[in-house]
Length: 290
Image (cartoon, rainbow, N blue to C red; front, side, top):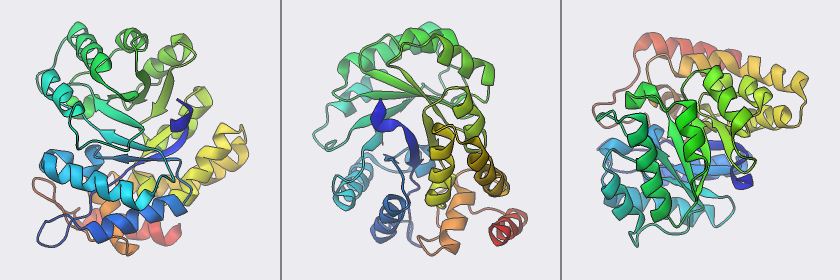
């Protein structure tokens, strides 16, 4: 669990103009994050546009990040979906190597019951060779993992953390209060991270950390150390950027910022498209003030 304490970043996937994977941009981003003080890298989360990336491409992206990282930071790989048996088959693939854990989102679209969600993670937990970070994000999946279900899952072998993006402080506090000592809770919402750490979370898997890893990691580190004066200063400095980045969806906002910083191109695969002009203007202003 301690490997995944502090700032983790859900990495974007850089594309070229022809929509192929931009491996040079991926190398730039990986080094940018490592140099920025990130504690671990998360490859192929939803911020990485994984629904539009083939399994072969995902494996190639992972290999590139592993190569550039050169064992400097722990790596988490996104392996999730709504077909439990397919996930288990993927976990047995020889193409997944040199990782420290997996991030597995709760099943989406088919909207299983709470018992179905529990059985899904139970099957994965017994199949996985790696520690599992479960991911509760009802805004994307269409179903909420309740605090009660998360606490049941917390007792399973291999499931060591939950990434909470439910937007409910009540759910988060219920989990933190009752979870086993060896089960962690990670923020999935950048703008709530300071409050969540104060409530007992161990860090965040971030979007804005792609662009501003140094400042956001400093904020997280201050908060984890109990230095809320300095943490608040950085939080409120970053808050306008955090709000603007999500105005027109994710990863549209953060990729626009990364393009302005010269790290990768502002390119996407449909159905994701670039942010609109109003959001660009808001981000330009927020970056200028920052």
